[in-house]
Image 1: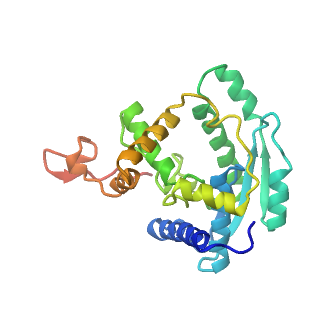
Image 2 (image 1 turned 135 degrees about the vertical axis):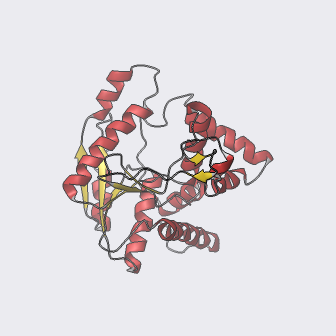
Amino acid sequence: MIETLTAEQVKLQKRLHKNVWKAIDDYKLIEDGDKVMVCLSGGKDSYTMLDILLHVQHTKKYDFEIIAVNLDQKQPGFPEHILPEYLDKLGVDYKILNKDTYSIVTEKLGEGKTMCSLCSRLRRGTLYTAAEELGVTKIALGHHRDDIIETFLLNMFFSGKLEAMPPIYKTDDQKHVVIRPLAYCKEKDIEVFSELKEFPIIPCNLCGSQPKLQRQMVKNMLKEWEKDYPDRSEVIFNSLKNTSPSHLLDRDLYDYQNFKMIEPPIKS
């Protein structure tokens, strides 16, 4: 890593730190006594998330633990030594999970089929089991602002629903709290930061490696929009924080006959 940062690099680092702090404060992502499982894939996003959460921990504003967890999915050629060496160097507590989800995904779906959804489900199940065994209070994922926008548009265009990725949520079984500390961070900032920090990036042979994925189509569409209408992504992201239920059409959310919000059911 470069020892002396330029003014632009310092500004970038401060911007990313500020965005993570804002997400933490806005959504109460970190609390005293937390044990946070940082899911580390070996990609730019998860490395950046770990780096900034270590910074947050170092400030001592919150008293919390960090344990980095990597799922080795047994992809051919996966360099098993990179993450343990990196984490040992940092002095970070970590656990490597070994589960051959690669073979399951490739066998189940076969040539030419989209792997992301099945791969994601298998990954989540393994990580949730590990979270329970490790006694963590929060599971941190590396999704950033662009992931949230793309997911929102994917759901709207291809699934017919208004749904994105919240910065914090409980799993369906109510057992785990999942957080996204990079929710306010732009992907382009993370890319530059990752290069600056010289993270030992491990490429993935599954997620994002297939042609004509719907997510890639949405990503390309957003890039084209940005050329003609700068800051469109910013406007879309802000819209997710400024919803008007009475101006939508969801009768489970708003009682149009009595003109009032519908109280969500209390979960037992």
